Length: 632
Ligand code: PRX
Image (cartoon, rainbow, N blue to C red; front, side, top):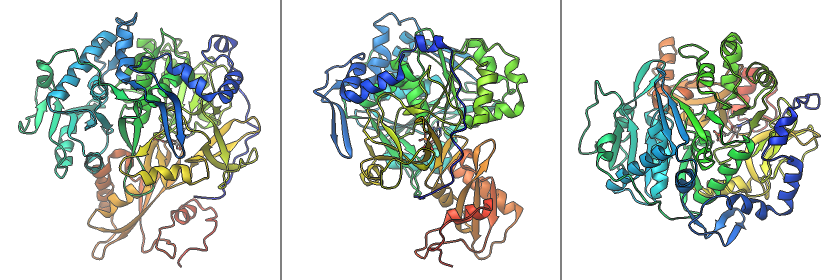
């Protein structure tokens, strides 16, 4: 990891006050007081929240911290779907709208809690019919449609461990994830729809399971009824046929608090993505609490998070947190600029969205196309705005605040990770906001900015963002790679190291600057340099490759690749586009290099490690820092 870096001037950032009515009505009315109470008795704090949920058996102890391993709600038994569904159906929310889906062509599907409950149980019975049992891994590779969420909840219902793979990933990325988790079943759809065009997901699955012997069955939801895909009946089964004659009751599997709930892959600094493992009880309590308190969710809110359920944001803040909290959730298989850049604002207007959670990259895209788009719609229903995935730069904050929130809505810039499972650092509703700063640790979390020895840095000095205490929704391990898990807690003594660089202001507000390792955040998506490099090297013309992130005004970062060709291949525009296409097919469009430069040599350490930092400094015309280990 880096030891020093430039820090922007932090103390001149101004505060934005939030209308008093927000604070008066907030679930966490007094941040400071609540935080103090939490610090005084952390277990009491979490126990109180857990007590709002339903359990088959309550815990013996709130937590057991055996550094670096944590258990939360020790010996408790639960099933997250009981809190997502049964709890509401048995109560006054039976007929409340749980889910509104909007298609690319504005088709709409609406599920009440009652209907969602039955759909989940039917698919759960379908999975059981195929022999899926507690602990089996199920890979879900689907577009943003209700069945994607139903499949996740159905797995949780029967204790199967889902591994959702973002529907935009390519063959290589999907294959690797299926193999690593040894998934028994893959759930997919024939197509996804984007900008009016169909993309065949099933064709990608067909290829991705070729050398994945663990896969016994593939469930295919057929959306295109006019030209239905042909299924290979030995292995593939039609989603609708599977659930045609199953009962619509399926008892929830009794899960131990620490049984795995899901695996979700995230980029690592080596070639292989890491399967982050989350467990049942702590994750449930953490996402439930943050949904209620960070978004200050009320029963009549219409909540829209624009992420894909295939990312952690979707897991925690489309599915598990909001359903546990009984929210009305909106999902849309749509693109922010299709059919025009007003599509999101039209949806906000049509459905009366009150809480809107998106990524800075989308906000910057909206800034670029101008305020005529949001101004064409009635956005008065909006109450709270959120941001996640990368730093929300002050210009984007101001635009979001003025043009979308009309200087009324608080913005929660939420810092967290796949690994943290839940939101960790933000500005709680009612507290003054500071553009450029995510905010402070929420009650329940102890965050700090430290040097490499774990000592807090002085205000205004850069350091590493760490957590000093375990929290309920924290990752429990990296699937089949516990050593990698321990690294999170062993890199800096007694702390969980997030891998982000940050600065703390005198007021304690935290500004997150970016990654400290070889991960590039492109449009809010985590891309490992090593993963792109190995995709490039798998092309027959490439001998070696190094990838860096370059600042990009829209996407946050763009990917530039330096490539050494094998003998017999020469640089050309055709080869450049072939290589870009190759990465696209292997990993998916999000990982595509924006630029490729052919070189004869790459800067390396004497031990042969590529020094990407040197490439980056040269590219950006800045000082490369210490290059004493450079080979040549
Ligand atoms: O670098 C941080 C950035 O996204 C990383 C986590 O990515 P992922 O696991 O894909 O989860 C994204 C959604 C939670 C972090 O290490 N990041 C996330 N949120 C913010 C952020 N950087 C700055 N500000 C944020 N609000």
